[in-house]
Length: 105
Image (cartoon, rainbow, N blue to C red; front, side):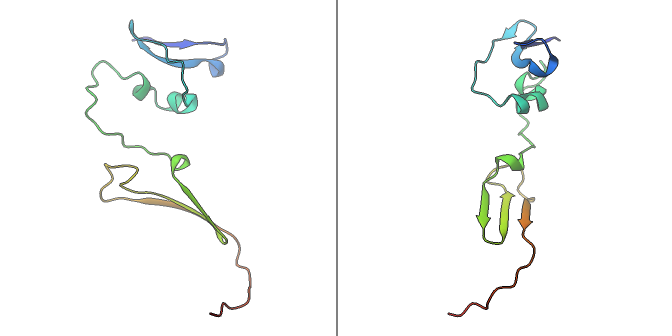
């Protein structure tokens, strides 16, 4: 099984293409080449892959980031990753505690 790369001479400059053993064709994009490199079996699946297994990965970088005064938060739930019916993940970044006057209202 031989996967095909095009453009550039250095390995880091090469763009993976969805071609294997004479099947497939070049993909002019737009694409996320870093994601393609990290997931070569999704871009160019083995011949034994029938495509019935759901994707079990979802990057937090793709999740919506909610920005608020105290920091940020994002989450990945069944909405983004349908296979995860009993699992959810979240990432939170908070600023150091600041004193502020009490809210009245």
